[in-house]
Length: 125
Image (cartoon, rainbow, N blue to C red):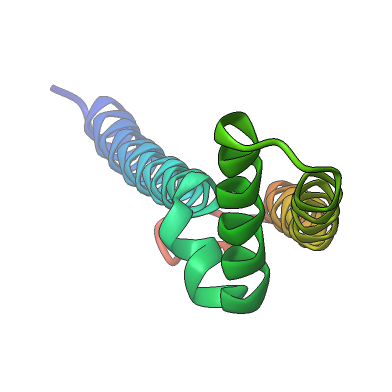
């Protein structure tokens, strides 16, 4: 084996290790992003989030649903109007916040995609 061939093999080995390090780092980054998106999705769909963040709106919505159910047994115009109003106002407040949360999550995802990767010691500059 000549000195030239040995040097090529060593250089090839270094490049191969550097490539494996970059691939592993990117896999970890992808796994972190998927985990974060999964957590955000579960949090946005969970009813516990809305009860914790919007207790008054949730209580008003539950009261409105109860009034609407009561209408089925003894319909009166004022209970129907009150129930409809409570459900509508609670949904309006929650849907505005939900849209804001989705926008925040989308902006966060876009920013994480456009952020340049950090160079490492193993990567050539």
